[in-house]
Length: 52
Image: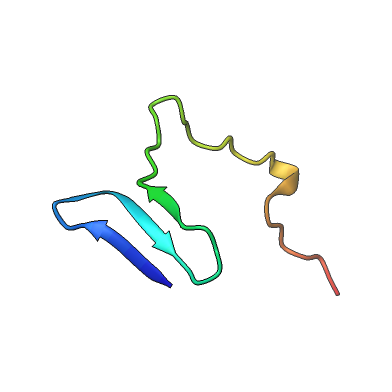
């Protein structure tokens, strides 16, 4: 596998692998609309066992 990139601009890389079509990879940008996961309900949290 070869990774081809411009050292001055690392926003986009090209991945090359023999006998496969090359493809481009870009930096993942997580937007402002992405929030935290909701908390689990109490019945799904870890609980101490009463016995075995």
